[in-house]
Image (cartoon, rainbow, N blue to C red; front, side, top):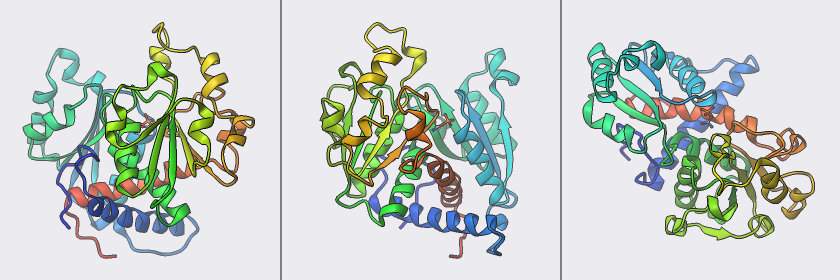
Length: 314
Ligand code: CP
């Protein structure tokens, strides 16, 4: 099984490639947990020693940038955190010229978040370095889809035959697209639901079904993933206000009763507390949210190791 040199999207990854990455990420996650409890384990800092990883985020991030940087350092790489505001982008330098210069400086991998869908593919054509998509517009956020799958697979053993509901702003969500591709390739059924103005026409073509109400989305689901209502777009008259959204699509102690006992709750973050999730649900026993963040470091270690052809001994 060959893994691609660039991770641009999950749509074109095979199930075998996804499973190989999740297997390696699971190993890294267990090793990190053992190390935190003081147990000795393999030192992975030789895997990318001497390699340089550049993180370029043209949109804000807490989880993704931090965890890629922690992951790169855990593998022994040097990390260069490109700051758009302090760079020559502020003087008008284009994205393509920027990445060509970082390539010439010696970057081995560029981890790119950009508001334009397709920007990582454009960059991959312009550079010798590996390119990892850390979220491009409303297209994909592949490592988010992978880390969600890792957290679910650890709980269930397999995703085969499971039903996952994805609820919220599907129209603007790269997380929804990556999750639909990843979960269906791994054998799960995906239902999406949300206010009708936030469900894109033809989304079923990606292999999911559409639920018209929260009850329809949650009934018999094994897990629900709530997506952020994008407050930056809330001025748009077609979108519901936060209060309306919380009343009809928010997850709280009352609406959680629509889910089977034991079903899990996920959210990629950042969470608008009291809108997509009430605090008791976010911080409650069914929530996988902090475990998702933990999976993120391991998935990003595995992504960098595979894209950069590190020789990993199990
Ligand atoms: N889930 C996610 O992408 O979070 P950040 O925007 O904080 O990276």
